[in-house]
View (cartoon, rainbow, N blue to C red):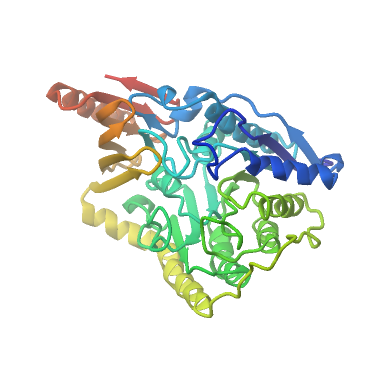
Amino acid sequence: MTNTLGLTFFPAFDWYLSPGHPERQERLLYTRDQLEEEGLFDCPEIKEYRPRIAKIEDLQRAHIGVPNIARLITPAHLTSAGGCLVAADAVMKKEVKRAFALVRPPGHHAMRVVHGIRGFCTVNIEAIMVEYLRSTYGIKKVAVVDTDVHHGDGSQDVFYHDPNTLYISFHQDGRTLYPGTGFPDEAGSPAAWGTNINLPLLPTTGDEGLHRLFDGLIRPMLDDFQPEIVINSAGQDNHFSDPLANMQITAQGYARLADKLKADIAVLEGGYSVESALPYVNTGIILAMAGMDYSHVVEPDLSGLRPQDKRCNARVDELINQSGEIYFKREKTQKELLAQCHGVWSRKKHIYYDEEGIREEQVETIRYCDCGGYFTIKTAAEGTRFGDQSAFIVCLPRTACEHCRSMAHDEALKEKKTGKWMYVLVQDIATGEIEEL
């Protein structure tokens, strides 16, 4: 295979949140300039692909928009998601060994239910790609390793009930950074307990602590889970120069991580040191994913790099022990939790959309069955662009049996008759169809 790595670029020139916002097109333009200057597009190991427009059904396998997803997005969101699907196709068709989708808008803060923009995200481009891989290529077991400095609370939400997705997020401790979540006890619902792994690191954690964590826990978990495909949510805001966080990772630290992880597909997430970090971090990741020499990639200014606090390795060791026990004892714990919940499990969520000031209350309930069951979501949101909204949502997983499908529709019809909800929606995850009753 001559082409080792496929690249898709989409800088989204026509999409921004506000003038001067840190999530802007230059995040990709400086990287592209660096790659062209280094002549990487002329290397036989690298092949560039154009993104395509994703379909609404692609988005609706992962999301339910209220009132509908089409009214909440722009063409840029469809193209960003489409760039990920192109990367997925290139890998699955064996045109390249790996792929990196350098696209925006980003996605890992977008949850299953969408009322607007939060954490710069409206739709979750990794989750959309995972469901596309399952629908198009029959992929079952997937690992998503999220290397963004912010906890990927949206990805956690989408995959929280899915025992076939191992979601691993390392991030700066949520007590010190948005979104304030991502702790080890957020480990998944009963049937999926232990497949949602959160690793909150202390501020100033650097390359030493990161690789200590990867070697001591992340690699062993991946080896045990044996996913059919590994996806990297490639946030780069753990870099020491990033203006929105307090970590101390270098471009070399990221490149060595990419080399060890050997993700099949990487998708760009955060990273807001536009000139000082992103061109070099992205170059290092690209070289590592392409199997090329990355040893000479160095930032032009290392003056802002601080020593790692001596407490950071102690936190890493604590996480290796605590989260390792959660993961490696997950099957025993799952049986215990399922026995305790007697076939029904519920949780309440309070969700804030920082970009739009929306406040949402959710109650999510799973009804278990030998097939895996189905789940419902009651959502009420204040201050959306459409006013206050409420919805009762039924989600039908791919594995839902006919009995569960019948029960789910009966429950939706019952809620419709109460007149309490502005919308009653049924999501079929396998087809991407959403029925409004």
